[in-house]
Image 1 (tube, helix red, strand yellow):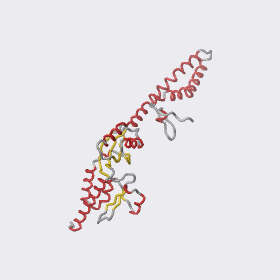
Image 2: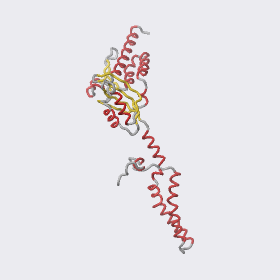
Image 3: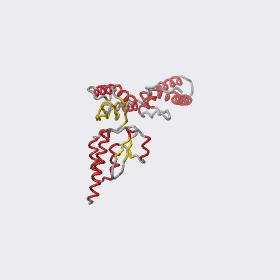
Image 4: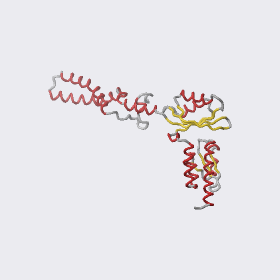
Amino acid sequence: MKPPARNTPAAELSCEVCGLMPEPPKARLTLANVAVMLPIELLVHALVVETHLPYVAKVLVLTLTATVLVIWVAEPSAARILRGWLHAPALRHRRKLAAAPALWRARTVLLDEPGSLQRLTRALARTGTNILSIHVHPVAAGVLDEFVLSAPGHLGERELLAALHDGGGTRPHVWPTTALAMADGQTKALSLAARIADAPEELPLAVAELLQARILTPAGAAKQYDAGTLLKIPTAWHGPITFVRPGEPFTPAESARAHRLAELAEILAYRRAVFPR
């Protein structure tokens, strides 16, 4: 069977598993069937009425002929010829969803020179992508810029990576994200600090939540991950704690926040041991 052409209602709406189209609205389906059936009914009546058959025979012939033509000709023709009109509401809804902005997190290394961020911004703007937030982290090769991007729904990872590269970025990475990425990192760190102040033993879970990472156990499993995706925090009370975030390296700012939380937990745990309540 020949596959449906792209950019047609069948290509956009047909199920990937069964190949069926969604049920069109009843009102549109009724109007489409009437539009196709009416000429057939008139033609059959005109032909049968002119015959010299008895009245009962004419009624039977009209009924059977019209029914067969409706089942075998009218309904399939309506579904095929008027397909775009029948499924217009679903098509509009589908295209609105496809055009809706999608949120992405992105990181890339730029040269630490005037105009580098402007070039990257222009490259993203050519794809219709908007920068919602930006954090800059100094690194050895320049600056590591971390973005939250709002991109058109039809853009995927490949197009965003190409835009970052065209804008002068090196080692670009992008990940789909949610509105939670817009939460201020400093505010989140302060909230978790308050949590640790109440319960210092919550340090491993608080850091994992802060970094959106997981605690790596046993520590020997670290060999299978890249060094940039591992973060080890030495503590006196908990021992070394290793966190991993595959595919998303930790930034210097994230590492600093995690270590400050660990220092806070150590101070509070020491005070509670020396000055018990």
